[in-house]
Amino acid sequence: MEIFESDLTPELMDVLIAMSEDWESENSCHGYRKNSAEDIEGQRIFLAEDAGITVGYLFGHMEKAEKTTSVMAAETPYFEVEELYVVPERRCIGVGSALFRFAEDAVRPEAEFILLGTATKNWRSILHFYIEELGMDFWSARLFKKLS
Image 1 (cartoon, helix red, strand yellow):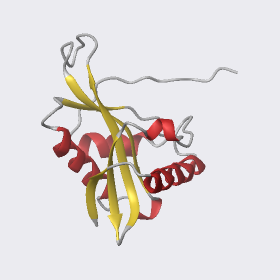
Image 2 (cartoon, one colour):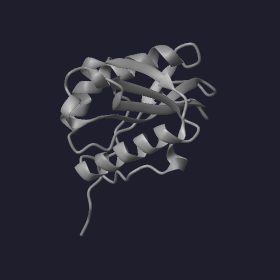
Image 3 (tube, helix red, strand yellow):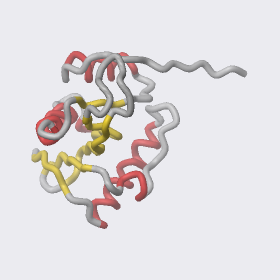
């Protein structure tokens, strides 16, 4: 397996949109919808490939904190992960961890933090992945209850 950062090409755009369609059909996240080109353009893109086939991706972008929070001071540079996706048959074997760690190393010279949000329905698994496996800290939670 190879992990690397990639420029966005029309062919890669098609691959990422197709993968996001697959993710949407999994119905594993609250409100997830497939990406459009506008969702992907301007992002830093990291890929996991096996024998030339994309099996996972991570994309995100640099930001600066608008105001001081309990975690960081105003103007602190951070990398916001927009999406991290691994095809179902390649999950739980280190692909997602490898993508995250590669992106972490790539943005470290520019960013003081990596931030992300998740809307997964399997919150126990995702918290295990991000906190226990990748060493992230829990900052906040936003919960919801649909009222009928």
